[in-house]
Length: 254
Image (tube, rainbow, N blue to C red; front, side):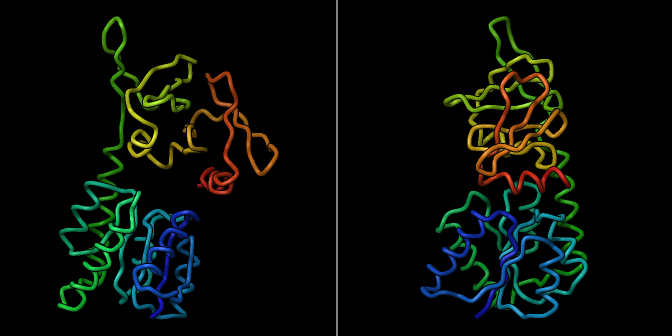
């Protein structure tokens, strides 16, 4: 058995390798690519028993790769996308894992793939299915959070997502700072907020901070492979963690 893992995030890749080895109780040979370009090169040279595929890769969505090259191997998608996309997955009988996934989630997805494949019910990706999935992605993008309802002592105010410069965790809540420097308390944790924001616009630079691409004023090199970021309206400079710096640089160039 040999598999292909298409995943741009290194921690997620390591987790998938661990899950695969634990499930099959052996070290399974695999190839790994973080981009459509590298994935295409591997698929043109190799055949795989199945593919574990993220949707958002470094150079675009993996559906573009599957549009460009015929894939006969079963694919299990691993993604943070939700709702509209997974309705399309279920309609087409495709196995998937929703991030942040667990060993149990992975086991269920593998068992679904094995069941569909053995029964002959597995649908290989064709252009119609890919088109439906792309449409679902577009629909989901249209449904990212557009505003937050902020409870104030004088009543309720609306905070447009487009006005947010940065968001910082504060216990069970978060503080969003807008481009004018005004701070707003959001009654949600950082992980929940991050899932509601458009990935091309917002990046989680460390465990407790999210920044907006629209309000980055300056970026400086810092020690231990970190970056200092000056954000519009925010007094303190934000700082990437050493583990996110590389992905942050690539995100800036999208």
